[in-house]
Length: 611
Ligand code: ADP
Ligand code: MG
Ligand code: ZN
Image 1 (cartoon, protein in one colour):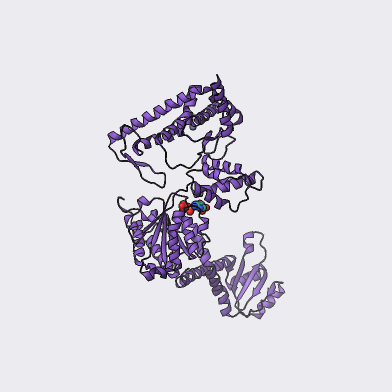
Image 2 (cartoon, helix red, strand yellow):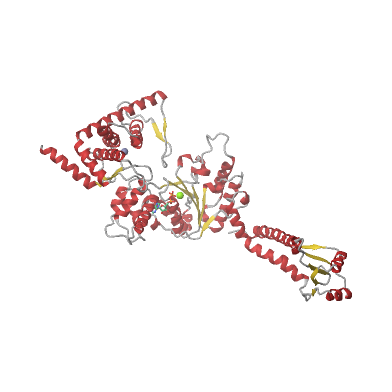
């Protein structure tokens, strides 16, 4: 993937400089232990009988002095000096008992020694340097070192190994992508008629719904190479780097056509240029380069650009213009059927027990995306291993759902008995409000085992069927369920605790949406007072109204909340016996199933009916 010409000189240069450094270092090391002396000093040493041994070479004599007790530092030194042929000298040394050695003159030619000390290291370093530089780049975050000509950042996969079978649900998305696959298979079929081929498609949807997976699957289905880059890869510290990466990416892609170029999280570069004060030069240049590349290349060659984002509303209008990402493929959160299919895909390679009912799990995970479900399945498998089983059973899956929703059980968090009582009544308050009202989802489980994500206990409700619409009555009842936790604290203990803060937040949000977005208040009717900004990530609503109206919204919201709160208090006061009985049971058992809960509730209600 790396153009050879560029690299040859780049790495050769590195190899050469490293070799010079190594050679300099080696001479420096040998110099520090060898010291040159003059010939007369050598003769002096000889006269004073200070020499242990000598080594005579053709033009040099190395002298190892006798051990000097006064100066141990001297002992490691070896001296050398020039050598003239002198037969007297040799016989004198011999008579003094000095060990004389004369190495056989090695016949190594200067060419060979040059080869060994220069060419060999250069060669080795040259061969190793791509890997060496790669790891250095990585350590430095690919920042300054990769400045300019970094093409290594472009990731190409020959085969993604993912097909549409790995992407469960999302049938509409797959359908519209299928045409692209067909086109990659057989471009002439389209060009013959004269049809212009789509240049690109934009995958839009919340995080974790499988956008990246789908893009890979398109490449896998079409059996073409897959180039992928994340939007944030383009944005670097130097202006112009991003633009050069875009250029490189398209150049490489055109060579490999037909292929798919996938730009993940494109909002990082494609953010609208409007409204940013001062602008961001780097991002703007990158975006401009991308736009011009998309206009410039010839789609009949078979390069298809896919991009993914979860914030389509921030994208620059120019990107969405026909002829660029003219297709928009919505990859939405899966519905019940989709969730079952995703669970099936992910449990395919997992040993399942006989009691597994994926439908029930899908039912309990409304709103979960593919990534969550994949996570749940894996979490369940891990739990099965932890429990020493060789199969995953339904209980593992349900526990995994709770871990994903509420965090792991935190058994070491000790509540005082008083706190435990309060938490128990709080949760039973929720459960009773859910069970007694008409339009609410049945209780699946109540627990007061604290969870790592902060919940001291919780009540799990499970829908009987998938729902896409909520009526005003249902929302009101849902708010009442949320407020019934606090109401139970008040009814039983006459106190208010911090445990209700999440409930209050959710209830307030629901009430606010009723007034400002769902047109469900008598006061404003169907006036849209707020709109959602980031539809695909939990966005904040934006107010479209005057500030006086905003304060009226607030009072309308608090009116709804207060009336629901009163309703919850009344409901619990009418059912104090059930509240207390179930709470006591919960305190004892810490976890109560939906069935146990309903049994106690029914028996209490029956008894009351008989009286
Ligand atoms: P996105 O790019 O939309 O944020 P990803 O494609 O990265 O989401 O999905 C993350 C993981 O979630 C995938 O690797 C896959 O395991 C799982 N996943 C998501 N959606 C699906 C799906 N529809 N079918 C199967 N698995 C899915
Ligand atoms: Mg992704
Ligand atoms: Zn609560």
